[in-house]
Length: 215
Ligand SMILES: Nc1ncnc2c1ncn2[C@@H]1O[C@H](COP(=O)(O)OP(=O)(O)OP(=O)(O)O)[C@@H](O)[C@H]1O
Ligand SMILES: [Mg+2]
Image 1 (cartoon, rainbow, N blue to C red):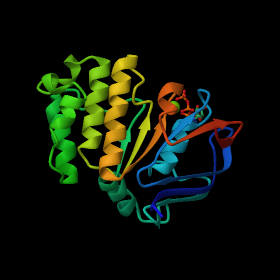
Image 2: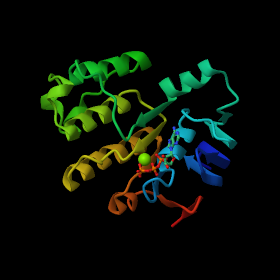
Image 3: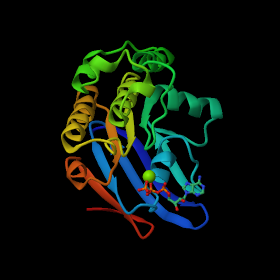
Image 4: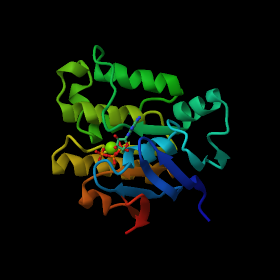
């Protein structure tokens, strides 16, 4: 049996109104799952719950076999820093620095060597010396993906990682993510509006009417 990297059980969460109740979601090593759903249905919130940022009102999140939110803040921070990678819907790069410096910081923080092949695969090798502010939106997005992969995460949480990209570049970015998962026996949770990309995952879930259903 392949190992369970993420196991979220009985998850409920509300902000002003209830977003979802009693959701279950799990991810095994080597697996890619996609979550689709209307804007505002709570996809990003669910991803943040599974990736250390939001403790759900109810339910438990287990990462790598340990209950996440019963741990100390320092232990949760360590999981966020060393074990998982998060590609945000809105990326957070250091604007005054070059693309390479952004990746170097992530690699340094996690103690991993930089894999320069990633830059070639993402077609950003030629812009790594440029300041973030001089890059296009899609190039910045790919730098943020390179930065996340350079941490060698065991799970990648990706929130609309191809939102700023044309179809061809989006496909190329997804190839890089899928290859990474396969090569490292990692896992991917992908939130997307692109059904074509979602369909390339092992599992496809729809978040609708406060429930998560496999489609
Ligand atoms: N920190 C917060 N405080 C209050 N309300 C929030 C917070 N984060 C999200 N919400 C609300 O929860 C709902 C779901 O937001 P979420 O970002 O999870 O949706 P989404 O499915 O990712 O949408 P999109 O496809 O547009 O990215 C929205 O109505 C949003 O306003
Ligand atoms: Mg979102």
